[in-house]
Structure formats: structure tokens, C-alpha cells
Length: 472
Image 1 (tube, rainbow, N blue to C red):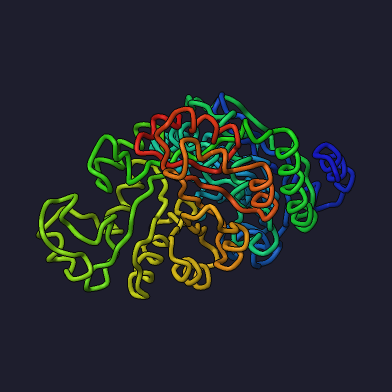
Image 2 (cartoon, rainbow, N blue to C red; image 1 turned 180 degrees about the vertical axis):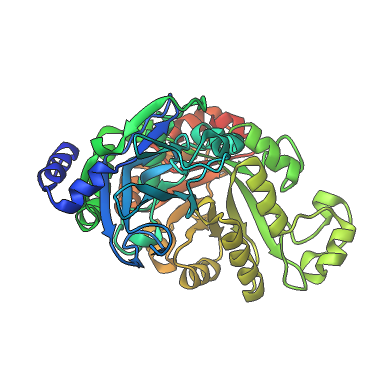
């Protein structure tokens, strides 16, 4: 097993001098960081364009026409973003025929922007581009003004949502990095929560990119997957199960404090420190996914009617039941993930759900769960990129076999009524088998503090509760 230190030493060793490397170092930008920024770049993979071409590391074409004679692409590597393991951001520096800074672009949350500040100027000092980096997240801006506009979102990312992304797998590394699963995501969340910070938005910490290890992009690209694996090996070795951060899942929202599956229950869950809300999905007569545990409206709303027999218009005339789209907007607004207990699903409703998740960029914050073997199997078969969970009630179920049969990523025993302390049923042998299969474990909704404490010591992936404050 190669250590993290040995990997860095090796990358430095292969960083040989070439004319392109000298050019990249000579024009390497300066990055201004928040004074509390915990993570700085480790390495940069450079590509020099002397003609129009396609970036090898970012979804864009490099067009020199009218912008410069040469473009230097800097693919900048961090081991950590405040929300996930590893970060790869980009800066493009365009040089004129005399080798002077002529123009520049930089990456910004999946896209890129020209680095022209609010005064219409290209920020530079001594001929080098100077950019500001979003605290924790590292998107680039030509001045602090862009980043201050995003301050509420950034602060949430750096505090309550630190580590929420787990192991990051971008399209560039799809099928190359294979380390993402509920257990590795839990390790990453634990590590990053320890590095959470409140940004100042004072960008006085300066980093000259020439100080990073500078290698050709192909070299960095080959180095990245083993680097991710080495970090996860280190976290597995140094963070024992009882110290691992357990996901706090508010059962039907904070249902002890507000009407279950309601907007208020979701908002309160977020205020009480929940990571996700467990909500129930059913389908109307006209194929719209909505949020309700029961198919009848009687128990919760005190009115007659069954959801499968009502159109959305008829349903919402009778009771304030949220649609799935409204649920997504609510969860995005308060900054909380979703654990969907799918009670019923049709192909039309499934297509609507996936479309909405993709459209809102919420895929990494959603777990699709069900007691139905058919439902979980169909979801995973149609969308292998989403996280799925299989629920079961019997203590005699083989969790690994069930997960393998359905393609589930998480097993969810619902044993809240099995005994006074159902945590004792999660034996070391049971947990070892599940973890060896790279499966997560989410447990039943639990309201007994001693049992919650036992589950946390076991290092389960997540715990549900009507009172999510008990999980904090």
C-alpha cells in the first residue's frame, strides 16, 4: 500500500523540466483564499494549446482566435473540497504573441467564466492573473464581489453541509474511480465535519500556483484514482466505527414537532440539524408523485379519499399534500437531503421523479428506498447512478443477499418494535458481513436515547427519528 506521503514524493519526482512546464510556471496565477480556508492546492496538471483544441480534462473547446496566441490550461488538484473528497478546478490563461497575459477564464460550479471583474478589468499583478477562490468550494472569481453574492450558500456548505458530497465522482472519472459507497461517504463526511469552518470572506491568504507540484495533465490524471483510494485507506485506518459521523434522518420530517410529511416538518428537521428527511412517495391517478405515508387521507387530514383514485387537482383541493417537485424545492431551500420511502411507483411517476432530480441537481442528496423488491430493482436497473436502499422487517433476512438481488447500496432493517434494544441484533458478525459487501446500514426510526447511543457506537450509516434533535 502506497502512503499519501510517498504518492506526493513520486509526483514531485516525475515533475521533469520541459519548455511547456517552464511556460506554465512562468505564468501560473495567484489565488486569493479566505483567511480561514483549510485546503490549498497540491498539484496542477498543465496543457499548452498553440492551436484550437479540446480540453482533455474539462468539457470545453479551447479557441485561440481573437484571445491569444497560446493558452495554458491549469487543471488544479485539491485533495479536499469542504463537501467532498478531491477537487479539480481549472484556470485558462491566454497569452499574446509577445507572451503577455491577454485574457483568462476559470471554472465556476461546473461551467466557466471569463475573469473580468466588475470594473471591466482582468485582475493581474506583475503580469500574472490573480483570482479569488470560493471558501471551501474553490470556484474562481475575478473579485470577491461574485463570492459575496453566494455567501449564504457558501456558509452552509462550509458548516452544516460539510462532507455532504462524500466521495466525488465527476463525469471525467466515471468508471475510473470505484471507491464511492455509503461507507466511504461516511468516512469522508466524518473527516470533513472536523474541518468545518465559518468563512470570513476576507481573501487575504495568497497562494502562488507555481508552488504546487506541476506536471503534464496525463501524469496527474493517472495519479488521481490511486490518490483517492489511498486517502480512503487512511481514513478507514484512522477513524474507528464509533467515531464515524452517523446520518441524522428525520422520520417523515420532524414528525414529533409538525404534521408528518409537511413543509413545516421538513423545515424544522433542517433547523434541528438533520441531514436528510425520510418522506413517503405515492402516486395520484394521473401519475404525479406526491408525499404521503398513507394512501388514504383520513388519518392525517381527516377527509375522505384515496390518493390512487384522485387526480392531482382533486387531491390538492381536498388536502395540502406536497408534490415531489414541491418537496425538492423545499429541501433545496432549507438545505437538506431526501430519503424517499417509495410506497407506490409507476413508470410515468418514476420518469417524473428522475427528471426533477436531474433538473435540480439533487441526485447526490437523494436516496431511493422501498420495502418493495421490485421497486428497488427497477430503480437501480433504470438508474444505476442513484443510491438505493432496501427496507425489510424480518430479523431472519440475509441483508447481503437481499441487497445483491436488488442492486441496493443500503440495507434498512425496520426493527423498532422487535425488542427493547434492537441495536443488539446488529451483531459484529452481521455488521462485518454488510460492510465487507460495501453496503450502508440505515436503521429504523428510534426515539430511545440509550438505543440511539448504542447505534452510534456501532457506526451505522444513518438513524431515523421522529425527534431528530436526539441524533445530534
